Length: 230
Image 1 (cartoon, helix red, strand yellow):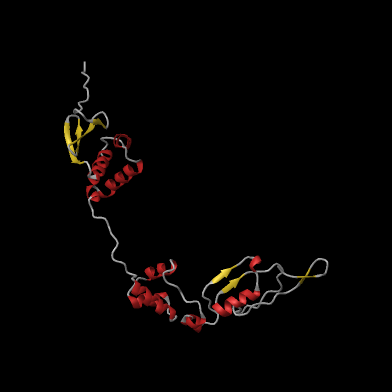
Image 2: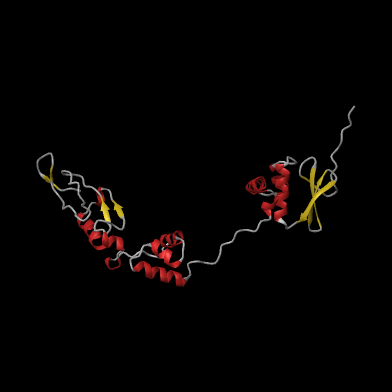
């Protein structure tokens, strides 16, 4: 008849599962498989802890739930450690963290970049002159650290060369229909506006009309009276 073998657990150990336990003593954690020590690290060495517990899970010695229950760590922490061990192995836990290099857009660089933008040069040209990545300059503009000029005096060369080219386009629904406002935006800022009104007339000719603003028109209502467009 086979004899029942009781698990051998070192004195003062916390059980991780029936075969695995851990002892915290003198500032160190020692892991035991049965009565045999298999690994040891300092109690503040989080890298070693994450590496070894992930290795135990990946090798089937214990489950993720055993680590979470025994050490009180979060499920996401265990999942990240297991994923790193599967993808990068032991070395993945001891690689130096990537840190950002020194700031590229210093105060002087920002000042010079804004001066070049104010002359009408495109962001791509400014980035090339200053030895910057275009994406770096684009993000600075997006986050309002730099500003594209909006006055006619500092208009870009492309706008001066192309009379129907706009800086950008604003689209309104019919509540925003205002020919006077559209005309002001185009003539003062070269900003194109697109909208429609409730009572359209015949189609416009198929020719460039970005510089022409139609005047408000009246249409006949069902009772024959003049009706203003909305």
